[in-house]
Image (cartoon, rainbow, N blue to C red; front, side, top):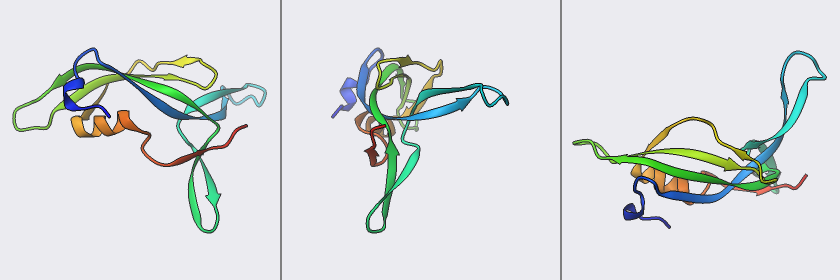
Length: 122
């Protein structure tokens, strides 16, 4: 588990992340469909007797790179970071987006995925 002293600019954290195999439509043409890994657990599976949880088709990794940490006066500490995903086949997906969270939310996000999921192999 990471602590506050480890969250500094340039720090890198990595954890397991669920991936779902999806078909993505490129246009209105039915033949223009590609299959790819999508980060997250997007399907729902039923667990007897009356429980349900999210399901995915494989596990990859997500890497968090801390860009900066700021503590504005009278506000909570904010962490600015980027995310890079590695799908189960080893392909990297890195959206060009800067994220930010308060420190407590960031620490829980780098620790584990936000909810329980089951891996259902294809």
